[in-house]
Length: 267
Image (cartoon, rainbow, N blue to C red):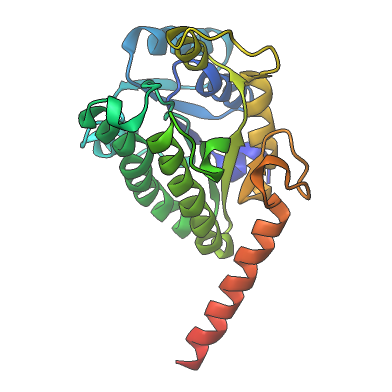
């Protein structure tokens, strides 16, 4: 199958208005997928949609949704309506706080956990069911290297990304027999507006060795069939900053899935 046959005809991108999300949108439009663009801020979202419509023949609809709201997933589902969504990219989730856990209001951490955990889980539950029935489709969970260990200053953020990693790996194992691909795209330092805003807020210089958002999105789309984990900047067999290589994690999950299936047959 072509890319559009495997993951089309519609893609939903959450956190689409700028940075990596916008890169995903442009590249998916080039591949012929119609787009449902979701983000909190209306103006940059509409601007991107207008750009895509002017440069391609794909359909492009937008939905202004705060992904930290309790009804975010249901509103995303409503925005999609009866369109056949074959690809979901959950790209939103940067940490705007930049503070020690106890030095910030609990409400801000609640919002981060809602956006990165509950909304992610609910959106996947809604859109993955029809993918499983159709026996094709894909989900990309855009993560962060912070998922691999607790770090001061991003305690909650790292914890939410650790959830996404484990959730995505399990979902990959469950959906793999049905032809549905799941990829945790673990980003390193990436040049995005959110990253620049955070560094400016902290009074720190912006790193010179950041990956481009376009390159990250392109690699994510390329590696989607080869989940469940892509660690940016590392080869499949290279553990590096992750501690365990993507290949080793994949084999571990497959081994556990095989053991579980064998145990179930004996019951």
